[in-house]
Image 1 (cartoon, helix red, strand yellow):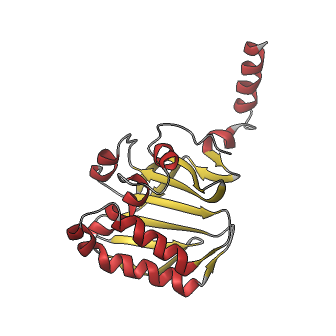
Image 2: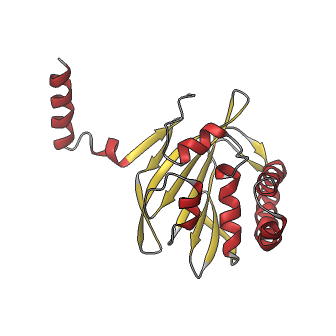
Length: 199
């Protein structure tokens, strides 16, 4: 029976009906493409999961890299473009989100690293503050491109100028991948170590 089901699914895929399944990953009803192009390079979805605050789903996050990486050190050392994509699952005050991200960076980097990243941290906080509120369904990405910097996109549209300091993007990723991550299960999900089971 199981073989029949597998065969049926393969047949459906060969007819095109299952093509979309292989191209996206569903995380709390948010679809993440398994691959995308950034700055002329193909990125793959390293992992994706849900950020929880107690039992409340706050947002989904997906990490895109040029190659799969299973540790924080590997992610940070990997050359080439990178993307972190966030999709909101509930409404949240822009100032509050900016403060949470700033605290998350401070908790996971040294004073020296934070000082090098401060320009980007302030710019990101300003972007969220100017938005007032991010609503459920809103999304934002931070794209890092070597020699260009980190570009913030809100609902797919670039906001402001790139943040030049390369240290900023590494510091930003540590919010989720650092020693004191915002959510331990989300860290494992972004590193591709497990799929977030809390649905």
